[in-house]
Structures are given as C-alpha cells and as structure tokens.
Length: 302
Image (cartoon, rainbow, N blue to C red; front, side, top):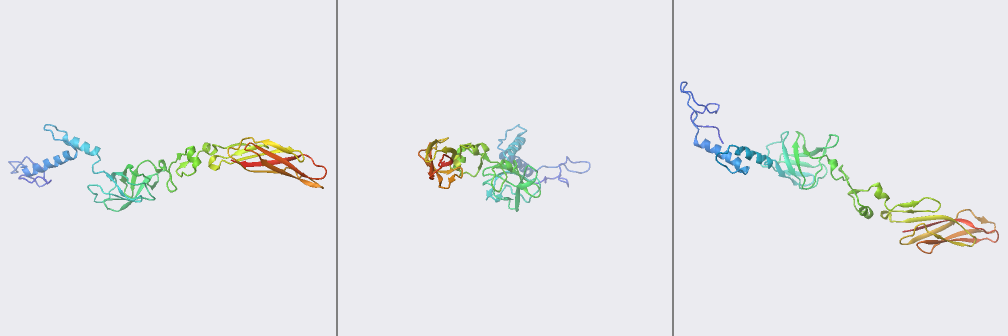
C-alpha cells in the first residue's frame, strides 16, 4: 500500500480539506489508493477468519484478536537435533532484537548446551533460569511447547526451571519414586529408591541366637546363627528362627571356647537336615576329661 497520491496531497502526505483563499487544493483520493486500503483490510479479515458483514464496525478488531489468539507469526515448530535447533518463522526476522518472542514446539529432548538459530541469523545459546536466578542450559522435551525470548544475549526458554524436569547425569531435575518391583528388578536408572523400599524385605534379630534376612534385590540371602551347649560326642537338633524358603547353602560350626586337653581336642560340625533344622555335633577326640562344649553355628541360605 502506498500513501495518498492524488491531487491535493500535501508535502507531508496527509489529507487536507484544502484552502480556496490560499490556493490549496483539497485532497483527491484515487481509486487505486482506496482499492489498496480495501485489500489491506480484507487481508487482515481473511487471515483472522472473519467474514465481512456490512454495517459491522469491529470486524478488523475481531480479526486482530483472533490472530493474536492463534499466535500467528509467533508460534512455530523447531527442527534439528537435541543440541542444534533451527526455527523458521514466517515472516522471517531480519535480525535478532531484544524482546523478540516466539512460541516454540520442540522436536526432540534437549541435549547438553542446546542452541537455537532463528531465520538463519546465527545460533544462540538456549538458556533458562534456575532456582537461584542464574541462566543455565535449557532443558526441554519432545513435543513440549514453550515461549522463547531473546534477551539481547541468549534465547531464553520461559518455562519452569529445569529442576522440575527429569533428572539425568547432566541435568538437574526430579526423579520419580520407584515401585517395589522396579527396585527388585534392579534395571531402572530413572527412578529413586526411598528408605522404606530399601528396607523392604529386610528382617533381623541381632542377638546370640538371631538372623538377618536381606531383601530380594540383594539376592534374598538369609543368615542364621546361634550358640548352644552340646554334650561330649553328642548332637543337638536346632530349629531355625525362620525357615529358609528355598534352600540352605552352607552350615558351619565351631567350638566357642579353646576347649582342649593334653590328650586331644574338640571339633564341631553343623549339618542342615532340612530348611527348618540344623544338627550341631560336638566331636571329641580325647581320652579323659571330655565334657559338654559351647558351640557357635552359622547357616546361610535363601
């Protein structure tokens, strides 16, 4: 569209009603100029999806509202990789300018130190603010939609601080609490384990006769131990404090004191006869003075 160009147009291109006494001719509006005005108005109405209605005076305003609501010329999908992104707004920007703002849909999850190049005007660091107000490398996710503003130095992602995102080895963030099956499997690397789940499946009695049961994610091993007096050349059956669910792997026993005589010594043996019982034997190799002995035993299983 051009400025008025008919007879009577003043030097500064403004309408004038003329001055017959001063010899100034009134502005004559040409058909070309009016057609240009009409097409300019129609293009705005069309872009805003407004159908012209005769006698309505706010159609141009309504079209502008709709264009703003639709984020025309400001909302676009980026392209590229996790660290090198491009944005091609239409119309293209001629240069970066402070406070330029775009609504961006990201195609990928963010990588380390991402950049964004708008209209091919050069890659700018893509940043966002952390909880302390410092600018850090932006964190975003595939299909995330966020506003990005140029602050004169960087393109800043106007989204929640990165600490609300998924934490990784390189990005500060939050992690979901793992379920007990996830903890037990031991294969997930994107969740955290709470003290309660760490202790789940752990049970123990820490006494002379006791046990320790490890959780399944540590193999579910069970350690049981005790101390008992066994007669010379005798055996005693001990009931485990808790039954081994599957199997007893090994059972050991030792004489608790340095029991010996000048005529021989004592030995102790443990034999798990079932998942619920172990037999403790006091084996004597002496000729005189044999006696009952305190024997400590240990069984390991699962």
